[in-house]
Length: 388
Ligand SMILES: [Mg+2]
Image (cartoon, rainbow, N blue to C red; front, side, top):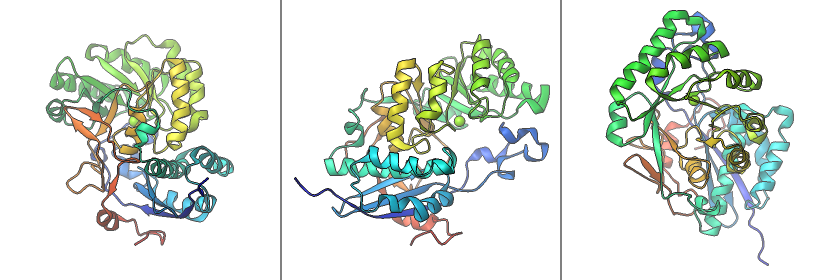
């Protein structure tokens, strides 16, 4: 029997990356009840960007993990706590290591940037596992269910959706209940204008980012009936299980209810799945606990007949899971930050986007090539954890 591979080092790369275009106008959110914070998100939001992690092993193979938000907070928790639980361990025992990371942080909470950090580490371990097995992660997970999956775009540019062959466009809702009838009218007018631009066949999705309540969501859904909205996303606060139960019991629309972007772990998903409170679950692979946790969430979703369409599904770390998941019919393509698709992307992969459909790569692990010069140029150096 050969000696197990061992983890020798864990490196963190917190990144300072500019925010997305939705910083320039109101976006409904929990802070929308305060007029002084309503005009734009930078008035209240943190500026922690994405973070890459790199796990080294004594076999010379290294794993690259990622989380799209939480940068410095994640870097601190990994460098000062979680790294020592990994060093010296066999990286291929991902289930065991993920469980150790989760159990060792229960006293700190089970959500937020802490789970982003654990997700990034889990993904780096899967990358190592794939590289050691000379298999793509998608193939390790059972292989692609379909040859490719259709993508919808999150962004603003309807022409780009049509040109790129995407199935539809998801836009942020601007106003919540505190903005009254004028806000509701603007929300509906925005969707009406988008339907006009997209034509009858493409989907419209509306991201409400926890900014609504039950009565407003019901009224909005009724008002949007003529425009065929595919789903209303995250209307209520994360964790408001009773709110979603109430919404579901009064829902008469053909529009689907989506949420889960800000829920973590299989424990976060279970109450929604048990009673089929929603139609689409959107846990983010780089936030919710990594692929190890997403596999468990997928089991519940399949049993409940709920679709899994993860937030930020376009990154290779998410897409390898999604393409191997029978509950996932589509992928979110993000047209805002450009970390994957910009002129000088931070990382590239061998996944292929063609005519609005994404196919998995076949390179070992996630097939990620990191542009380390770009990482260096974008390091968040506000704390000393940023590494050269
Ligand atoms: Mg969302």
